[in-house]
Length: 381
Image 1 (cartoon, rainbow, N blue to C red):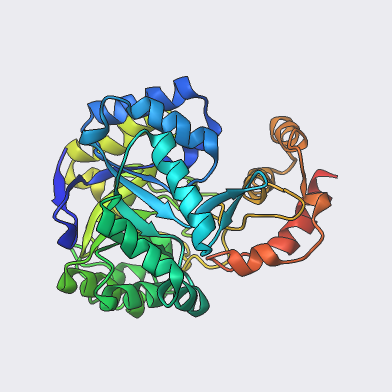
Image 2 (spheres, rainbow, N blue to C red; image 1 turned 180 degrees about the horizontal axis):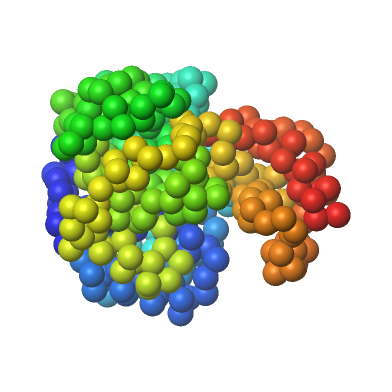
């Protein structure tokens, strides 16, 4: 495993990281097997943004006795209210949620205290100019967090964080689909032989952000490197071609400022497929050749990556899971029986959507969720 310095934090982190979001689907034994394999292969940085109590407890139990070898990104403002995730800037609520995080992870500190999910100007103003940010500073002063980070999908908000001087590192969404501008007649022109910036293929504000992070020594950890798994499937990929985990990881690690790619894992095998990057050949890493022959590509807007930021839903619909079953279903001429069965087993389904569109306000990628709920209800009958 190779390790990289995470900007001004000075932490040496494995370039293959652990995005723990998918662990919400698993019991303790499964979580432990995945985390144990990650540790065995040298992964030492983990992001836990989820507020669901069981997943926090499972991670804490799995890491018991090995806490000191892990660098943990823990999110301040990711709270659990009435059985659902809710982003909050209310200090009393955040204080309770952060105490819960420490307790369930069986630790007395978090390495990287993340200002949670700042994607719009009002988010920035609320988080950075009021009691919330004073609480974050209090956590750092007391040693309960060692460094201040921020999570965002928006390069404009990320730039604000870098220039603030307060934020030491960022958790930022990055992959080829999110970074590239709409297609030209010759997509191959977007890539240099050594994958250098400056060819006009990267959206300017994102290219500027990567360079600014490197200049200001603000380290980047990457979320959504696989675009929710869509990049592995030609039928679902916005490029019309499939990439491998190794190619997606290589793309992210060639961005300036990036220290670690926080991939998600459902099984120990998924961990091994990501860590295979460390021994991969240049040919296996070469995403440019694949994308050069792609029939199409997109910037990533309007596509669900199942991140869960659409929560909470007033009808308690698991929107990300509904979207996932919809995407799986429309890949086939007829809805597969297994997909239909999984959808029907959901406690709350798309037909219960009341069209309030609160989820759309929270979605980082502009997904027309209410419209998709209608289509999903019609599709599954």
